[in-house]
Each structure stands twice: as C-alpha cells, then as structure tokens.
Image (tube, rainbow, N blue to C red):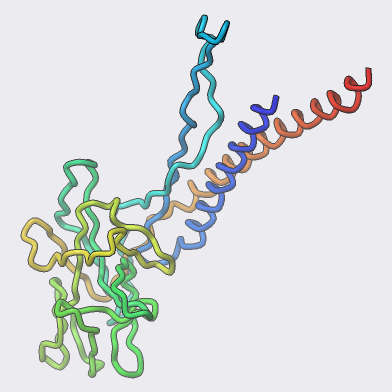
Length: 267
C-alpha cells in the first residue's frame, strides 16, 4: 500500500513540474526569440521481484515500477516566425544552414553574444535591441558584443545593419554583430531573462568565419517565440487532470490506511 502512495506522489510531483514549465512558456509567448521548453517524462527503472526461500532465490515473481519522474527540460530549437517591427534597432537572426550534430542527430544552435552585469559572456536569441544614452546596443539591458569581443556603441541615429551583421553609421563601418554557434545543444542551458550559458564554462565559438554555418540578420524584424499558446493551454489542462487523478488515488490510499489503523486494528 505504501508503494502505491509513493507512485501517486511521484505522478503528482511530475505533473506539478510540467505545469510550471507550461506556465513559463505561456508567460513568454510574446518574448522575441524565446524557445519553448519541452518536458521528457520517464518511468523509474523497473525492479525485479523474486521469492526467497532459505536465503536463496527460488522463483521470479515479476517486475514492479515505482512511478514516473520528469527527467529533463529541453528547449525547442526550431526557427521562430519573423515579425516586422519597423524599429531600426530590432534584428532577427535567420538560420540558413545549421549543421546537425552526429551523435545527437539534432541541429546546432545560433545565438547573439552579450555581456551580463557580472561581465560574463552569455547568449540570447532576443533581437529586440535598444540603445542606451551612451549609444550602447543592448539586449534586455545586456551589452551586445562585436566580433572583437567588445560592446557595440553606435553614436549616430542614422545606422544600418547588413545581412552579415556589419553596422554602418553615417556610411562608416562601426562593428560587426557577433553570432555564435554551438554544435551540441546539450552544452547550452537557460539562465533566465532570455539568456543562455555554456555548461562547460567555455565561450561558444563564433559563427562569422565558419563556412559550414549559414545565417543572415534582418534589420527592423524580430524572431517570435516558438510557444504554441493553444497547445500549451491544452497540455496544461491535461497535466492538471493527471495531477487530480493521482491526488484522488492518494486520498483513496489514505482512507484505506485510516480504516486499517483505526478500525481493523481495534478488532
């Protein structure tokens, strides 16, 4: 009976985490460049049950599973739709040719490089850039990095950004927006506020001189998030109902144990 309690509880915890993931996706449905999270739910490894007689296994009874768990969260790595904004500072990163990792059979990922408040290098797909009072190009408050590794500063309001990321102000070259490429997406994790970091702590290589990677930048456009709001709401309702079903199972076990202890135990 106690094993049933653990199984129902594991199901409730799994669906709670899944609901939190879906809520976060819905909250970022309008965040430019946001990649929707996806949950991988697996059963715990099955246990082999055997009958023991005189300290030795006499026969195999069968297998037993102890419930499910949310193994990991992975980000959708597909290209989001482009949306025209008309803003000079908005830039969409468009994937043209992105190699597929041989081991995982999953395509790599392209990012803009930024610098966070601690001076550490981070990565983003959010192309809704802004200029501060000093002319520094920012993504969600984080300075954008050029191919030289320095923050990009644009002193003029008359500037253009080419398809390969070159920035020209009043006809003069200023800098090139650095685009990074990670071939193994397992090395990238979300850090919050639209940022990613490398798991191994190493800088992601630049894609600007990588002949195997093809991309382009489009000024006055942003990449929409990959969240499917309608499906997310449907999945959330499914998760809620699954949570509720496990909760009822847990309550049934609780009533059975209450009778076993307080009624049958008195006989």
